[in-house]
Length: 145
Image (cartoon, rainbow, N blue to C red; front, side, top):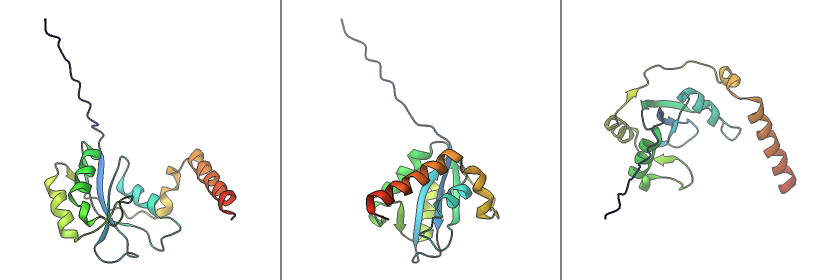
């Protein structure tokens, strides 16, 4: 008697946005390609840290069904242009990125946000702010700041 094998495939079908961001502080043709389950505007705001003199700008974003899959697909496609293995920054012409985004099924986010970065402060919860402060305090203890 033969055994029946049942295979179950799990797909992460998380909906969200894949995005391409630029920053005027970076060299030409340097872009961040990533994903978010919130909005691209909020993600751009979250990335605007004290180490950057200017905020990120959204070049384009696309709403897709399987956001992590498509992000990995883009990163794999552009792996030779990746600036650092641990980061999502690529040195590549914007036209090339746009062509790859065009091949992905989904809807482009046409709405351009004119929100001030301060408009997003209500998205930062008190616990996350507390964790961030604690991390900074720990760094100070470890590195003697």
